[in-house]
Amino acid sequence: MRKKGFTISEVLITLGIIGTVIAIITPSLLKNAQEIENYAKLRKEYAEIEKASELIIKNAGGQLHRGYWKTSADVLNAYLKYLPYLKKCIPSQGCWNTTPAGAYTFDAGVEVGFVFKGNAAAMLKNGSYFYTYVGCELICNGPGGGLSECARLFLDVNANKGPNRLGKDIFEINLYPKKLGIGSAYHDVEETSYGGLGWGMTGYCLMNKCPQ
Image (cartoon, rainbow, N blue to C red; front, side, top):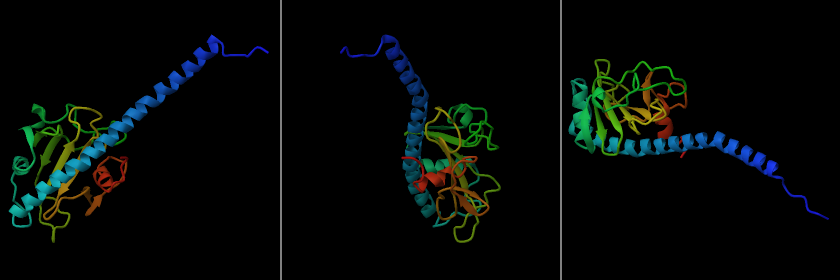
């Protein structure tokens, strides 16, 4: 009895189907791999920033207080004593990504209200962008090292590479009078949530809930 094999047409059709499946799943796999890498960078760089914060707070007598810093540049200079960096500048001079607002929501492409254009920033030696913000609303006088902010720190862990979105490759870290926060402070609690606008992803990842 003659064995029946596959015809050339059947082989080509099968290869075509396989190619289509690969084309569909490859971008998703690459995207997931990039996110895992970004989350790993966040955890590593947070540890370095936390050590720097401990030294800054120690030098301030154990607690930051209202008026300790006058400008964002003061905050940046304090951190750059302990964080290796390549250069410091304002974002428009090459220390932040070039998207219109510099950051977007976690899911959609709608711009977030926070605009990364002024204030102080630096490119760290590890390739990340480090952005500091201090304003009149950051009063830094919370009782017992509470959630009153002394500064807001932002990391873009892959610099100009996309997607340039909060919670994806851009992460906010809040500095309080006696400690560095793990999330974004809203309503006197640290947000550590997944999705949404992405503000809570810092804490979510630092609690080891992000893919790794």
